[in-house]
Image: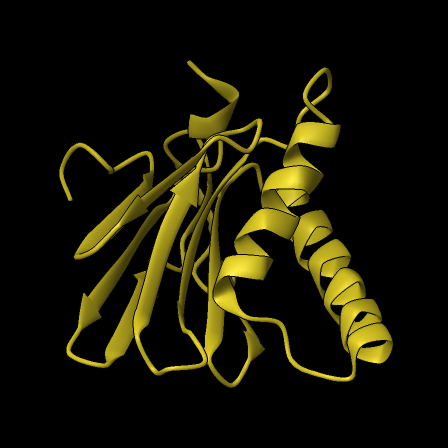
Length: 145
């Protein structure tokens, strides 16, 4: 069993006409045993940007805290909100920095750019990006979604 399957997750991001949607399950499990049914996996970064993190629960929480820190630092320096494309590159660089001891998370980014157009992307453990126009999935159920 892969370490990514240890806690389990299912996240999907979808794009529509000038809108995006992101959804996940709330189950936190250890293999086949359910521990909790209210574990948060989708996080609001700003009014037009969401990230879903599928993977090891401790790494999900760590990445959420690091991403909030980096976003706040960006907003203080640049005096503007981060766009989804910039956020995707930031997260990709963060994951690549840890490529020899990676965070066991597969992120899904869903947001609207400055023109109101949908932005969807996902990446693997080391930050290799994959963008899509209609939908992206991550987690242990990605074959079924």
